[in-house]
Each structure stands twice: as C-alpha cells, then as structure tokens.
Amino acid sequence: MSRSLDASPPTADLRVEAGDIHVDLTGRWRITAPTPKWHKAIKGQPAGRVIIHAENLAAWDSSLVLFVSEAANWCRVEGVYCDQKTLPSAVRDLVTQLEDKTQHPVPAGRTPDFLTLVGIATSDCWDKAKQYSNFVGECVLSSIYLTRHPLKFRWRDSLAEMQRCGAMALPITGLIALLVGVILAYSGAIILRPFGGDIWVADLVGVTMTREMGAMMTAIVVAGRTGASFAAEIGNMRANEEIDALETLGIRPVNFLVIPRIVALGVMMPLLTLYANALGIFGGMTIAWGLLDIPPSAYWVEMLTIVDTSDLMTGIIKGTIFGAIIGLSGCLRGLQAERSASGVGQATTSAVVTAILLIIVFDALFAVIFNILGW
Image (cartoon, rainbow, N blue to C red):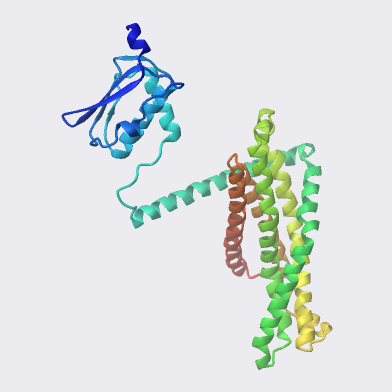
C-alpha cells in the first residue's frame, strides 16, 4: 500500500448502482481524528442493499468498527442486507460482538394479537413457577443438610433475624390486629343489632380473627416489613458482589443467607399470629362493651362456645406457611436482583407483590382443604 494512501484522511463515499448502495472506505481511520458518520452519509439515500468496499482501506481502529456497526444497525432497522465481505475479519468479529451487546428490537409492523399475548404471559408464568420451584427444592436440600450438620447452621444470625422480624414487629402487628378487631366488631354490631343478636359479635370476631384475619393480616404486615427487608439486604449484597465472594469461598448462599431467615420467620410467625388474635379479640371486646353494653365476661364466655383448638391450630398452621412464603419470596427476589440500585428497588417491590399474591392463593387453598377435613 502506498505511503500517500496510508496518510490520507478517512473517507466513506456512497454511490448508487442498480438500486444498491456501495460504500467505498478509504484512508487511515483513527479515533483521534475526525471520521465520517453513517447517519450523515446515508441521509437522503434510498433504502437498498448496502455493500461495503474496504479494498483501499489503509489502517483502522475502533472508529471504523463504530461506523460499520452504525451502518449494520441502520440496515437491520430498514430491513435491508448489509454486505461486509471485504472488511477485515477482525472488524467483522468486533461488529458482531458490539451488535450482541447493543442490539435493539426491530419495530414490529403490528401489535401482537390476543393469543400471542396470552401465550407470552403463560410462558412467563411457567418460567417464574419453575424458578420458584427450583429455589424451594434447593432450600429443602439445604435444610436436610443443615439438619444433619447442625453445627454449620448460623444460629446467631437466625436469632438476630427473630428479634428483627418478631419482637420489633410487635407494635405495628398489634396495632393492625387491634383495629381489625374493632372494625369487625363494629360492622357486626350494625348487622346483628336489628335482629337482637348483639352477643353473636363475640362469635364473629373470635372465629374470624383466629381462622383468617389474624394470620393473614400479620402475614401482609410482615411481607411489607420483613420480606422487603430481606430482598433489599440480599440484593445489595449481590450488587456489591458479596454473594459472588461467598460462592468463591465455597459457601452456598442458601445455607448462609436464606435458611436462617426462613427459620426465623417460621418460628416467629405463629407467635405473631397468636399475638394478633389476642389483640383482635380484645379490640372486639372493647367495642362490644362500649357500644353494645356486653360485659367482657359475657363476651369471653360466648366466644369460647364457638372458638376451639381447631380454630387456633388453623391460624397457627397458616401463619407458619405464610412465614415460609415470605422468607422464600424475599430471599429469591434478592438473589435475582440486578447489580444496580434500581435493580434492588425492583427486587424489593417484586418480593412484596409475590409474597402477598402467594399468601392470598394459599389462604384460598387452605379454606378448601380445611373444609374437606372438617376443621
């Protein structure tokens, strides 16, 4: 190659022949010098096949790769063929790698139809169900391993989580349960008073709190408080590459981070459920005494005629399962979080939504199962 050609400035000359756009690349392409821009060169040209000629190319660096990549993206959007056979193989490889990182979807000619949208949503739900099932299976295997090797379980971390998700959650859980009991008693009084059934308010509040509202309201509060905290903590650890460091050291993140949190919630949720039941019943008793003139002793005796051990066990079983669901959802979304601040925020939101959705679904399943069992 001549010395004059090697020293010539970079050029990209476009010519149209038989409906095809021929691009002649010449000169010495350097990122430190002004280089041609594809969007300026192609302006006003017809959208035909693009053929790039690089026989007279002197030297090149990343500036040529960016130019060819821009041309390839334009061709892909316009739906035309881009012939790069004369380019050096290294340039073609770099352009391919750059397209893999920056490829944008081609604008569709029309929006997907209803069946396509249903299929996409079904496939997405199936993928998420498989992810959750795989994570549950991994947690079960880790639980079996830690049961056989109890000394490897992080008891100190689990006790600290019990304090955070149990003792420190008492104020908000108690307030919500008390208000729920007050609302149930007040609403029941409005309905039952015209029929002379004031005393049945005790039955309404007792059964509703022990079987349904105690466990569910506690689970929803804990999902928004503790489940989001789990997702944010583990998501930050993932963003800071702390989880990668654990895996490098041969420590399984599920054993180290997930199981202690799930055990803490599984232990504290039944206790929080009983606490919520007590305060909900107390709230209903307060309304019955102040609004219906029912003495607390009469309220208590009437409630014991309808509420038995099966009702309490129903709430405790639900609370335990709901606690496991909250822990699994929070930890899974934290482990799946993207390595950025926005990714951590999205994981936190997804953890709360997933936990509440599964709580409602499992509560409906429990209602059917307990009805079949006669509880």
